[in-house]
Length: 162
Image (cartoon, rainbow, N blue to C red):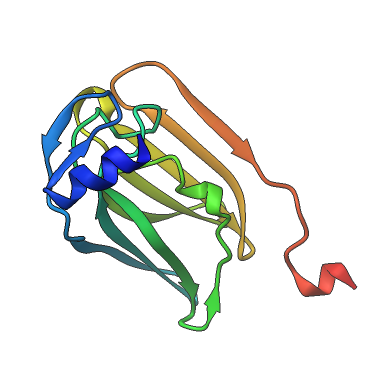
């Protein structure tokens, strides 16, 4: 199947996750989503770099088997223009077609909310950051009643590791 997909991409056709085929561009398009927020004395900046890819799976949030999809190629969250927040790869490896990203403050935490997908594939991804560390990831369907949550437990402050 991998060789078939590569050959089809050469001709501008990609096999989508649901087994159907669709005309796709073989050249990658890029897009960015940005947001900023001042929380007290802390400035929070978020930047998501998106890249167009052929559909990669029908078992992924935001993909209805439509070709092509936008994937998050790189994500950056920076506090006060100098302190990056480390984001595990798993934050975004199962979501495609993000549409918006917003930052909110909630009880001393920074909350990044990403909305993506469309219609029955629509989702809301919420990432909570406290003291510069990701503490939780929640994703839910905005059209149906299901979702999942991951909680992270680790020491990310250097003073705690000593």
